[in-house]
Length: 254
Ligand code: SF4
Ligand code: SF4
Image (cartoon, rainbow, N blue to C red):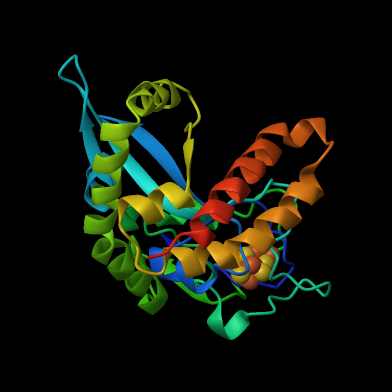
């Protein structure tokens, strides 16, 4: 089985939440409103071993366990364009865009042999998957794999940091486990969202105050842009709360 793919730069996939490596999240702290998205997976799911490797596992009371991905994320409603998307639908930070965007449409949180499933464009996307487009996937392997390998390497390198964060959150926020169990019971993957400030605090980030100063204006922009829209109530509440947390953190001495 061979798959072809070419991006035609329609910009349609540059909307909504964007998963990032820690490195990319911090490098874009002045651009993206950041948070951590936790995605639990039940034992037996086909990507369980990989998710357990890239994320963490949580033991439950009934001797079951969950694997959980914890992903720094540019937190945007699905109708909102990425702040780096130009009016011409081109990326304004193309050379320095995050690993996630360079690896598109492949996704290193999923086993390589299943990547062909990601090559079917969503409705409205203008990706060229005809045989005229370059061959990108063959015999269950990615053909041009540098970006995929690079992103996977960064994800593996940040595992200890994210596990430290998970330990902290599970200790100080016990309701998180029940939220994750609830999210895992949904047919379509459920998520739990936690704030960047909790991550900076838990991991004792030496740049916390500076990162908070960068986050504050962008969070306030999204507070304004989501105000009064009943469809975006959850987003608005989160931006308001995180903005307060960042205001506090930005004043704190290291
Ligand atoms: S950084 Fe660029 S490529 Fe990535 S989502 Fe934003 S506009 Fe699109
Ligand atoms: S939807 Fe497809 S064609 Fe459009 S920007 Fe994304 S990858 Fe490129």
